[in-house]
Length: 491
Image 1 (cartoon, helix red, strand yellow):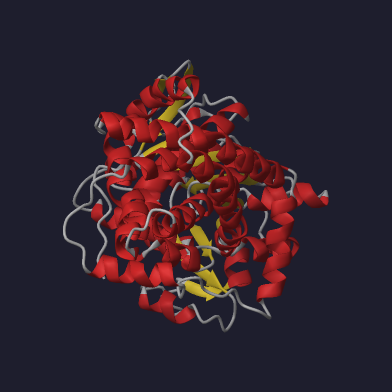
Image 2 (image 1 turned 60 degrees about the vertical axis):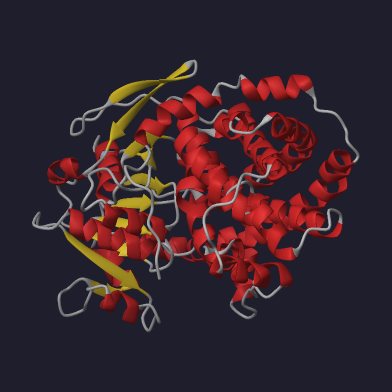
């Protein structure tokens, strides 16, 4: 994938990631003065939807563009229950910043489509028809492209089609932006994409959008690569895999190792969302291994060796299902079902009830459990290797497999629980996590833990490949562009 680009508005730089060079733009509040130039000719930005991304992007755009004359207006379905929430955030009919969805689409120069994936698939023809001539269509996810490809349709000709895709959920996009009012550069990294460019302005529009919602680091992808990595990642290490890993390990520790339930929860979920995530975020994946003592390293190596190939098998299947359109079709069908039968919650089971007690009684951070570390890192590395094999640029690989996990999602899991995330993220992510977590659980239980518990020795070649992997130096470079502060969560 070609990752070089030029901008007539923003300063670009080239970074070396392993054996590739990528062009990026650094964001930050010091770049906000350039936004009117990037958005030249755009008088109104319509933010359509109030789900995960809508509140964050609408508020961030409004604040970043304050004083520029560019209006940010939220568009929602008539009678939507979200109208009250939008008004509470300061978007009102009286001020001309809140309106009915199709009215806002028809009057906006940039239409940022943030309704659910299933709703996009159901309503895209009407949405396209409502857009005025010369308007720009903005997507924060490539799902709609994937759906159009699956049904043999295409975007309308004659308009710019761009993407600005935050590598984190909406609440993280908002919370880090708010923290960034005090510290320049606090935000969630973004990829950008240009699917159609009819006037030569699309690249600057996409980068401007990413910077306006707070991205400290903007890199180039395509909508095709984005939806593959994003939908795949949700089903992998970001949600589905971490859920499956936690379930399998917790059960093994309680039933096979005789741990008390609270101890097992600390050794699994609390480890992953606490010290493992913190170490990977600040020091890298290899630092997890290097920080263990000799016995811990041996345990890590055996678990890593037992877990890598079973994890890769499931991840390869997921990628094929996403790339073929099967996973996209399942999301659309699920959207129709959930209109009648809403998705249930998972947080009532014994494990997650134990977790509530553990979080309430926290006192300091636990030591890293080597077996948990070996399993989690094996799944993360398998995902990294698969995305590299499929041709994704290294910025995308790092953000979708590592940074989004440890800097956006896992902090919320630590604060509220893995089950909370599975029950409260987007429909596409919730569906994917519920569908694939049991597959990870099963493979880990049937293969990984059987071999680990039987004392199977480490695969020396696989361990050496992990130690010498190019991703470690790549992450060290990308880490210089991580958010300038850690996300802060409170009730």
